[in-house]
Image (cartoon, rainbow, N blue to C red; front, top):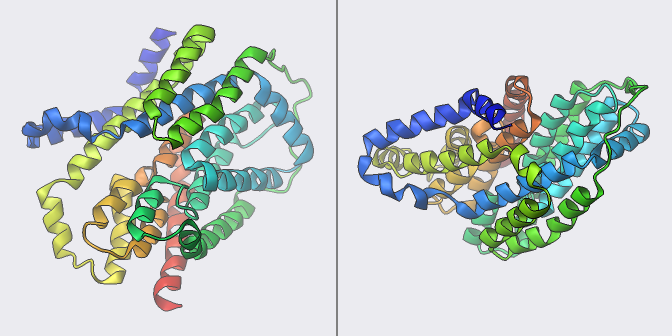
Amino acid sequence: MIQLSIQTWRKDYLLWFLAGLLIVLTIAEPARLFSYPRLVDWPTIGGVAGLLVLAKGIELSGYLHRLGKRLIEIMRTSRSLATLLVLAAALLSMVLTNDVALFIMVPLTTGLQGVGVIPVTRLIIVEALAVNAGSALTPIGNPQNLFLWKVSGLSFHEYVQAMLPLALILITSLLVLIAFMFDSNRIQVREEVDMPIANNKLFHSSLILYLPFLILIDLHQAELAVLLILMVFFIRHRNILVNVDWGLILVLALMFVNMRLIADNHIIHSFFTELRLDEHERLYFAGIALAQIMSNVPAAILLADYSSNWKLIAYAVNVGGFGFVLGSLANLIALRLARDRKAWLIFHVYSLPFLLVTGTFVYLLLFIG
């Protein structure tokens, strides 16, 4: 198992790209080397680590195969199944954040492939788009909204009201995309399905721990939350920890360090000072473009230093979550959980046009309507 993990890491090209970028940035500013640990958002890292363990526990418990079989019996076509999963992912992201929604929906979706002939990779891709779209509505849907909500000084209801037009555009566009991506043919159910033996203890441990884990995260006790998860699984289900994608944790840590080093660079600051972001259209396009290269959370934080127009920044960076995989951490998490190398290419086949279409609609809403 350890040898398999090493082989997987060797082929983790994103990990090695981020490691190489960090080396270049360190050579450029070696004096900042000892500040790297402070650049990592440890609560986010702890939250993702805990969710990885819980999601893996539920996945390997065998219960998702049974739930998947029931879903296919109810939703008989790929299109209806995709619509259900997308709406569920979008709704969950509004109240549980986009990352948590993925850790619930993606393991369920991967479990479907053992039950019928299902386009699992495409389903996971639209779920990634769905959590980015749904999470745009609420202040707690994603980290950039949480940050900008505090900047705005609005109530929860007022923030939702301000973001509603954006969320409607994104979710409506996604439902139209589903009509093109999935057909209405009946799902071919496998006649002989080898259902894994259900592990009741593993399923109950994973499910029961979700609530206290999320409560601790909400109370800003991420370190305690992940320690609780790791301790329980080390004692009761040690084999699950070996199967967790720990490479994702390293990738996220490298992303935090790299993107914050780039954002803090004096050349970058000089560039944005000269961009005249007081002009609304420039700010909108800058937010989308910046999200593509450094993710939408650091993009929101950076742009807030140059403009007080929190709403326009929120619209721009939430739209910027689509497009390239780095636009949102949710994209990265979904594709890692998919465990399909082709998913990275297929994601961009749909996500880039989706960015172009939704970005245009939102532009028309903001500046033409």
